[in-house]
Image (cartoon, rainbow, N blue to C red; front, side):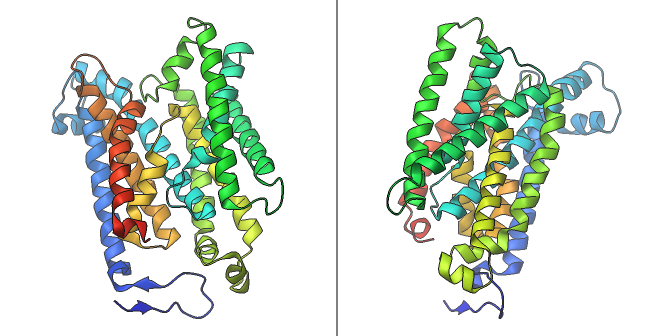
Length: 350
């Protein structure tokens, strides 16, 4: 298979014939259709099953009685949380994999999720912080503080700041913060009852005000990610070559990490610490997009919310009358799928 050379002055890596613009566009349209099906399923399936045509009638304003209350009051907010949090997690994962040049990385390796969870536990459970803006602020402060601490720890000593050292520092700090957070929650189960439910990664009963604040924040993060896509392509070729191609390596990394903190912090505050989505989705979409980060980011923004909504729907029906939180379903599904992805020779060579 012959690689096509990029036009002069571009920073994008070579694109193979199997990853042509036409095939990528077709794939994006298929993902968009899959996302639409997942949205309809999220609105139709649950303890009370509602036919998809009736769901469409309800959304068009043709009230159909009790079912309208179920769809509008319960399932629409739940679906919107899945869309916003899923897109944020998927793109955050794509960015962190690009920055660290590690296809098996996710936002958790910089301690973003653990830092946000730790700050929320302290702020809401101990300091009594409440409200949508206060919750988001805590999540951002925790995500930023953890990321900064990871960078400082990873930069100590000779050759500091390398992707490998940052990953090791992030994993270690994330484990410590997760353990401390869990210990805090267990000290008073009644006081931290809401925190316990949030830790499971559920899309149910989320604050509508929080969603109103979270959506613009995620859109800003997505905009930053798309804006630096070409520069991320250059960084994938190595820092020296990226600089030679005209990419500002430091600025790109700073913007990427800022976007990761914004996206992952928002998703964590909104839906709790949901695992595997930010790791699995960007890794899988590379099969169809190739190494171009612009397409990886776009595909991840569509595939990740699809996965999260499907996981939420499965959690509603898996136990009959009871529900499994979406975060538990993604962990149960994500672990074996990730093992399969890692073992695939084709995936390991990307």
